[in-house]
Length: 475
Image 1: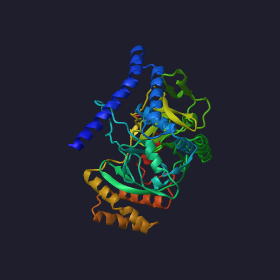
Image 2 (image 1 turned 30 degrees about the horizontal axis):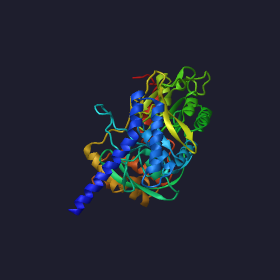
Image 3 (image 1 turned 90 degrees about the vertical axis):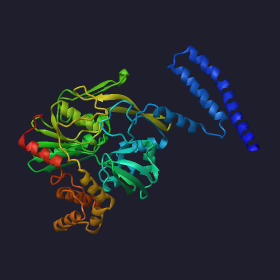
Image 4 (image 1 turned 45 degrees about the vertical axis):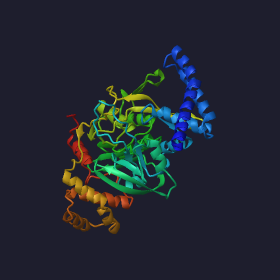
């Protein structure tokens, strides 16, 4: 009975304390609410200051102002339900600076946290509440481990990412070069497997280029950094010296980057008209970026642009500009769909990133959460249920990686024998796909990815065929 009485006394005391606080704070709130509109900035700023001061002075444990401030800021940006608008701590600001300048530490992938669709709305893709990989960065630990655009990270170490923001995930993934982190990947909805990554200093490559057979030039833009437009110019000059007659621009798995960089790059191919426009409720953020009369690639050079679900943001601006103006044909699969523009603002040593406008392609389309459709869809066909199970076994049992570890430079005969062995183990996948997976693993192991792949890359094969046939007219 004594315990029950004590319990009632504690509960009653707690209720009494809450009642006193309500009496203390409520009158000011109610008076202000009656006299001012609910969206009055001054009123809510004053209320915030009152609550901040009260918590600072009365919380059961002493708490510093910075902790309260950062918590409030994170909550404010979370309320926007915009994965691209976020508060940035001092460390976050430094990481962002390192990333946009082309060098940072970590595992080498761009990630986002999908936002759940509003109730009653339809979503093109199935929603998962985990961290989604927009694209791995070429040559990094993530790329070498075979992580793909569109994969989900369901765990970092043993912690689920379901309740984790992308910033939280970045903080956990980054660390001292040489240290390791284990993540759990979900692919194709049902394939789940762990991957251990050894962190490294990440230097972001920007552009690679080469000549292909048939006098066709190839430029792969990996990301839009302050260096990208100069590197593309360098590539065009190289291709010109070899008398190129057609051009493939590859922005697959390009997660985007700087708006200024992609505008400068697009201007190499366009002599007039709009490249991209930005629109906002703030007049100063409305802008139209137009092409200048001079071009580096004359109209006589036909262009094909390759896109996929890892092509996002700035790469979609380039693809949309070249498609809408009729300057290029797009091949591949629908792009990611990020049609917003963020600005970074400093607050002391920290800051925040805020969506200030949305961008529109020359035809006036905003592709946010929609993506850009290619003129012609070309991609690997979807697996059947049986093939998906075979692929799952291939990954979960590390069959290809084990083979390559024993045979870092396998001969053609070695590969043929191994493919036959996989079929005997019940791996019911096409020989071409198995050989491509083996070759990719060899390249990752030896850190020697080819600039282009005409043997297995179906989209690139179609691009070359299109340029050689002159079939650039839209379907």
